[in-house]
Length: 362
View (tube, rainbow, N blue to C red):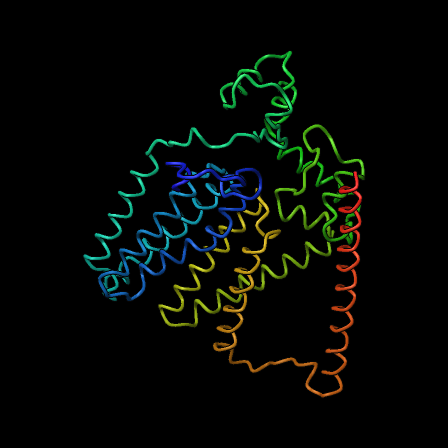
């Protein structure tokens, strides 16, 4: 936020994808998974004076950053989350007051957070000194060294794009809807290998080497739709497994919500809201190609599984590896897998070392 408002220091990595505003999708993906829990904390039994104000400030900072990021994928996702949270509060407004969860201190903290957010999102950005060595136009990145620019400003880029004789014109006109072009290519890939897909991590390879590249899709690394990318790489088998996992997760959260105490039920509703927002986000972005959203998703799965075991009274358990011989075989299997993966990584490291030596000789 300080970077956006004041540009207090020069970021040498202010290009895609290292810095926060260099890749807005990466920066906002974890925030969408965390935001609903700040609202849950407001509705929990926090009666001390400081906590609501700290939560209000942190919630405001999340909303402010998402607004500053100016990414439609995050805006749509946070809008859906806010609708789900508002609907939940309206339906449970009587219970909130009857349980004495709400008080004047929380009300004042909430008002402060709202006013602070509204003020900050209307603050003008003083980021004229930010580096624009890389200007992102849709699926293309044009560096200032590539074309002789009159000035390193967006205004000059747009004025050149209007000129049909400018080298920017073709890129600008084909980048109006690059996501749709990428999704079209993804659907074509799924049709080509619809059963088991083309293999994990193969999307960028398909674009570059399998005839799916075009002006609007050239050099694209991600489909910007995790479901389509899953279909490309694992086919219908992967999609069926994904929807089976999703259905099982929703059913588990529903059962926990119905059979748990109020505070626990509410926590799992807000967990559902977080996953719903992330599900919307994955239609336009790639959260589950990144480490942090995957780690948070794994944590959420563990929480759901643990709570489900506590409320499940069926006692129907299924265990395969109780006997020592099966445990040893299981351990041996994963040991072999680990050795194979490590060998592949070592070969990659060796290949990169050879490439570095070749480049240094040149």
